[in-house]
Length: 131
Image (cartoon, rainbow, N blue to C red; front, side):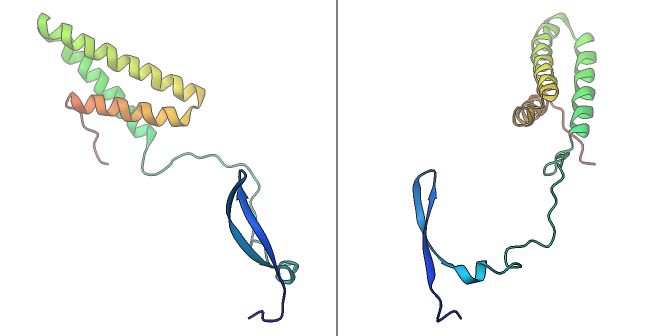
């Protein structure tokens, strides 16, 4: 296609690590419309949902499950109540960590806390409905 042009040879480096060599057609890059996108959005964006997780639905599931577990613990025998109280304190501590991650906007930790808490509830027999 470009039989009579000279290609510039450039080395690609990433953090001073050699990645490879690229032959660059200088005359093609000088065209004004070659590297122009159709539109460019420069306004800031807010990520509200990643993947299929609905955090509002997770919150409702966790709150409902914790309330149910507390009610079951209240009506349990003394022996069962002590073990359930240990589980409930662990769940409540996880819920507190989740809310701290929310308030600090620590999204990677937030995701881990949701996964951890929902798994702890799953082990106690609670399952999130698929609406």
